[in-house]
Length: 435
Image 1 (cartoon, rainbow, N blue to C red):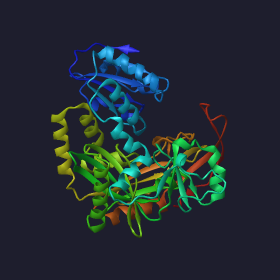
Image 2 (cartoon, one colour):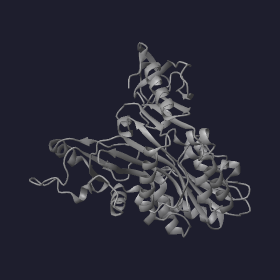
Image 3 (spheres, one colour):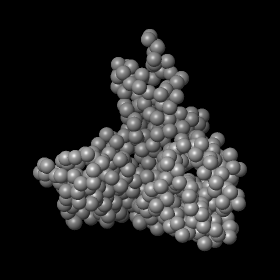
Image 4 (cartoon, rainbow, N blue to C red):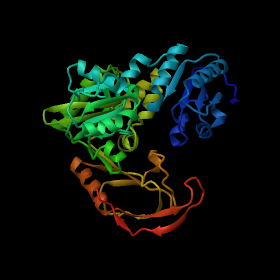
């Protein structure tokens, strides 16, 4: 624990789980005019500029809510009170809401946040507003486990953690026999099942202020996040202005209204089925992966800046940032991304990317001899690409050219995944990535 004394102005606590560039909160909070404390893991603490912080609480496990509560009490004592609590990871939003409730801090509280973390609750809320959602049930409410029971929906179904994210740990179940095998392994209170809806998946990302779009972009996936978790590439292309774009945005706005999201960022996913749009999922947070980079690089809009400014209670700065984003939202530029999944257990040797793909402006590759250790973080995937263009077609064409022409070399490793060096025993032949 470290403590530096500053004259307090606004007393802010940041709940930080990041240890990379996302931990540079000084970009968004003036540490000279505010008294800022952090609660984080040791790795998260190492990423901070300690000279600018008023107080730091290090926790071995940021998921331990009893430890979090004690850390908040320590921050409250060190700061002489707490005016605001900032949390940016989707996995921390509900914990932060409960802490605000306990310490009487303004901001999003549990009754609001639970609609964006509990998939069963969010779908019931959207359905109550008369919008299409897949039929859904909490597993604890379903009688699948009984010997002669009838399922409440037809197969295939999706079995999901109620508070999961990014398609992680989401199996598709096609038969009753497969469900019977899976059933004993699941903590029923933590899972839901929902009917599988066939159709293209769209996502809408942006920011809303006082129930009004500040900036929003509708995109269509190439593959989807569930397929990405299963080892396939994931691409995304922003839709051109037109009837489809307008319809996706209109449906997204209706979903956000049903969920009462009036201020903040969002990442919302929609299925385009043969009988209309279905609400799939939503996070009251900045979209992950390449999404925040696209907004910043294409439009000059830092969604994290908007979100932190809103959470910190700096109304003047928030209004100015929102107005700038609203002006930027009129841009006709379209963009997209491609992410290639992690080849777990392999070593990155090299890659060759043609420099003749129009619209491809950023490619992020691992360092040579990087071991893919299965950490599932975005910085540990095989490759990330970002694109810009004047139209949806241009961006789509560039993504498919990358899928066709990007070549890379991997190698096997010998030794423990935890060792600091790895011997290359088999250099694979140069391979062409296939979608």
